[in-house]
Image (cartoon, rainbow, N blue to C red; front, side):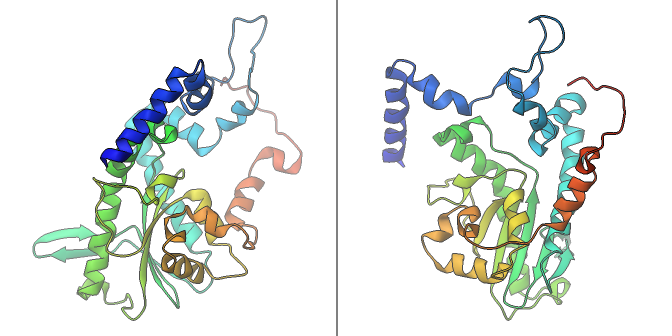
Length: 288
């Protein structure tokens, strides 16, 4: 750990010593005010968009997430979490021949608890899925040590939930009688945006040690995983877990090179937009 801290400090200090180096190499990962306000005034009549691609980004999950938090507070984030959990369940049901089970209530002595959000029973694998509507903070995007600690703190509860559910299945808690115990168990922790360093072989001081192979994946990675056509999701996950090196990679790296069908949920979502058919319906102008 000490050597990692020293190396990181040398790197950051070295960038700072180079004229403009820190700004050039790290600033692009920091917050850009245009992300929140892509259209600005004060530069002549009308609105000016210095970076037009940031306008459509306001309609992406990240844009909606932060705009909603700004306008509606933490209640919006809580509701987003519920919707994202249901969305992940819809994606999991796209896996052929998968039995997708929602969170299971169970008791430990007098305590009433809930399992992970979804349990997917496949022919070769049981997959525990915990959903977290979270995104990497600035320190994580900068690749700093604090970013690892912040990420671990956010993911710690999900890891504990995975370990607890796995233990209940192993101990044959009656509430989990319908979950097979004759095949490997793995876990996915699904987040709104990717957390690549979460799977890396780094010192995760505040992160519980997973009892089963556990992978943190972004929503986009899940959308690709469930539509694989040249390999089953369970086969890919089992092969990845068996490889000491690939098991530390982001799932996207293991998905590259494989074939996918179109994701019908994404197709349906795209078709719901007014411009999908090439015709725009009239409506009031909305300020960005």
